[in-house]
Length: 245
Image (tube, rainbow, N blue to C red; front, side, top):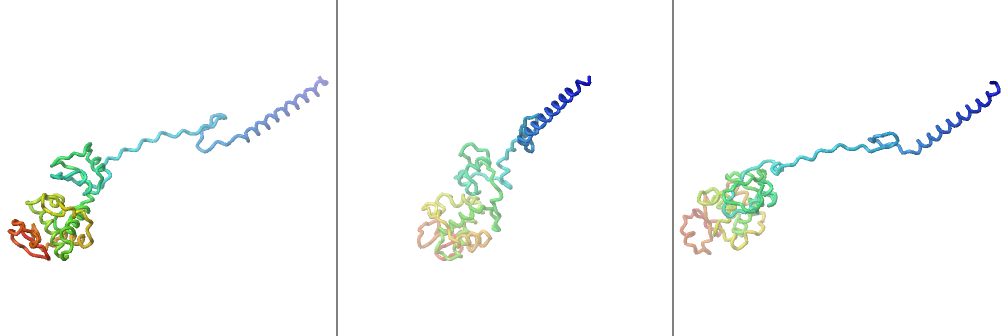
């Protein structure tokens, strides 16, 4: 038995060195592998990215939710989607989307939703959008440029008086585009950009200043031969315009 001890010791030493070599190689192998990044899931020696949870689809926003508040516009004769959309600061497509319209056809009496934040109440007793105020200034400019400022306010007042009168349409566009009511519509001068004087005159008329005393008509007596206009009761004359009831 004594003679076998050296062989056993040698075997033990060989085994120890072999084990140490294996440990050393495993350490080197481990150092050469990239560290798993944050958020990864490690399965043994395989590193897999964490699969994100399915995000819920965004909720659909209704067309009406895009606007702070809405009001109802009643379609009148001569209206179109273009004019209504322009009045309320919308595109035609936005107006159609807001009202779930599939075509451009609208009918008299139809009620359409429009943004309320575009509408402002004026002391004279009318509600207009900023676009309508601009149209009022355009008509004042077309009819009364060159007239004294008071005469321009007077023209604006006549237009507003018509809106408030049961004898005429109750919308600005209805008054301005009533058949044969205003020559600038016919000759195209209505579409010229107004100057600041006309805009100021429009706002003054909307504030309630009426130099005509409630007149519903005006004309230049030196240019007009219209018997109807000459037969009307005269309220006042300002510049070249005579204002009548």
